[in-house]
Amino acid sequence: MGKILNIGIIGVGTVGISVIKTLEENKEIICARTGVDIRVKKGVVRDLKKPRDLTIPLSTDIEDIINDKEIDVVVELMGGIEAAYEVAKKALTNQKALVTANKAMLAYHRYELQQIAGNAPIGFEASVCGGIPIIKALKDGLSANHILSLSGILNGTSNYILTQMIQNHQDFQSALHLAQKLGYAEADPTLDISGGDAGHKLLILASLAYGIDAKPQDILIEGIESINADDIEFANEFGYAIKLLGIAKKQNNQIELRVHPAMIDKNKMIAKIDGVMNGISVIGDRVGETLYYGAGAGGNATASAVISDLIEIARGKSSLMLGFEKSPQVSLKPKDAMESRYYFRLSVDDKSGVLAQIASILTQNNISIGTLLQKEIKHKNIAKILFSTHTTTERAIKNTIAQLQKLDSIIEKPYIIRIEDE
Image (cartoon, rainbow, N blue to C red; front, top):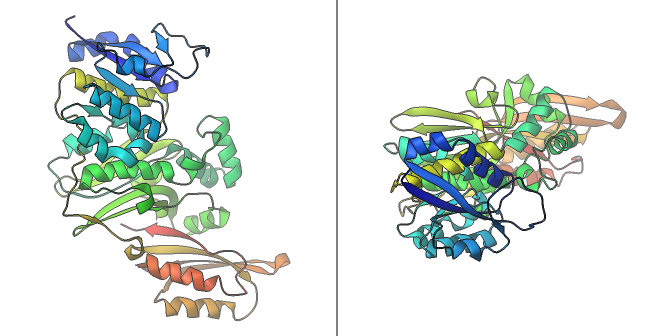
């Protein structure tokens, strides 16, 4: 074997260990495909006392990798945002290639890293949807296309929870606890269930597809915490599945970016993606729709994506830059201007005149009802009103909710889910 590519791994946890073991166990086939011997020279960990079945040297000092002139590639798997960004900057400044699985860091600092990198390769396939090669699809396979839209299930934890709620009739907390027990959800699951994790991933994909520079605080992000059995019943009644979707659309020169639960037609392929799996639909102006499906998380799936970047670097591919070229021709569509159909859940006093009050407020905001279900909880004198609207704007919905909350007959804050018909 001729050429050797030495790598250093910062953060030797589940993914890091899987990267090391995969490079060792699949060494023969990787060498055959690259003509390069990819070796892990060193790893950095927080705690040297923690038992690890590894033969590589370990350190607690990041500088041991950054300053090692024999290390060609730094693999950043430490997580977090600002500390990881500092590591990435140091690696690139020291003329080392960078491979990262860190979607949060890229969501905030992707364009800064692009400027720092110069000609140094940056691989980030593992940052979005684990083992699904969606980054390479956007950068290479679909590069002849204008991307009209992309939408997908970008977070396996929330998808697993929703699957349990819909298929096994569990409430949200029970489904969450099961996800934690099985290792699909962290002890603090906030980033997954709030939509934050999916938001980070969507921003990376939108940067590649459209050259839009947006941060998480700039886009609409909602989670799944408030979904209940009433919403699922309505969805089933009218042929919908509920999924947490990341959605990007180009309309003229405006880019619409949003993450939220959505009701989608049960017959759509993406509606059939259950459990911890991820799936992304991309529509190009030449190729039409393509769908990407696979494991979105887990040590082996993420390691597979990390190693695919290492293989490209080993092959000397020059196209491994971030690809985040800002486009002055596009701007972010304002949240209030977004349009959709909506599902409403209202809990109200079960008395005459309430429905008329609600209808009046809807009329004032030019919102019309599409379908309606009404349920009575007799022993509590509460009525549940579940309905969908025709297409309207986010601004009109916000105004409607604010007005509804002022009614004495409204018992709980109105809850909405967007309906995606396209």
